[in-house]
Image (cartoon, rainbow, N blue to C red; front, side):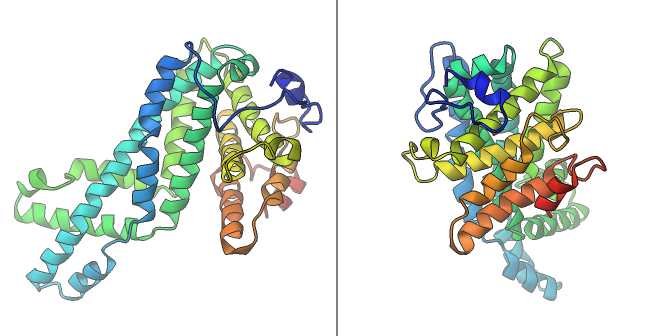
Length: 329
């Protein structure tokens, strides 16, 4: 990674040489990185369990349907309530975890952005890897959430029933698995199509606004470099053939897209304008380059394309080049 600056100054990536490589698979922390690395590891260790729980979420749709169809049948009401309460407990655990991720983001950005990001990314590869792992998790979580409509249905039913129970017995709110105040906060979280991305985006924007001593360019440069690094490493065989894990290409593609989205939210004019530090035309092409055969591969690529279409801030600006808009149409 010794020629990182040269590679990133040339958005085509043609200046990237043999020394240009970020080890997203095995980078280990230096003593300088260790304190923040340990904090991030404690948070990231929970991410696989969260994704497993979310991917296995089945909902209480049938019990809710029967209860709604028989509003005077107390047994069916109780059955639906008993079915939905454990699910709401699970949804609260996801919500609580989003707060942990949100708190971790500024700590990592502080380490990666307080000095020149090119030098920092070279020196602190383990933290760069953890930053990438957070971004990858965020897109995985939101993709699963968007494809699980039962979450919104279950939570809406829970809130309606909780309100009814509270009218009958004001003390019932105290014994609920999630009280009314918590439910209101969770409702705002789950109402957003990509709630985890919004948390990380808000945390990044807040980091920039609160840390006046760190030039905003350091943060946007860091995000642009993360995206470019991932693009070059998945675009050129001399890099992606060095990967030892089969999922690393998709991991890099998720990080590439998430970095674009955050850059677009933080940078004044965004990622799509002429002169952007991110080569969006090539980024979009690289997304399609590794599309695997079959519905699963197509779904993965379409999911990332949709993230660029619907969660960026500046794509639909009037001065976004028509060619970029056409590639994402």
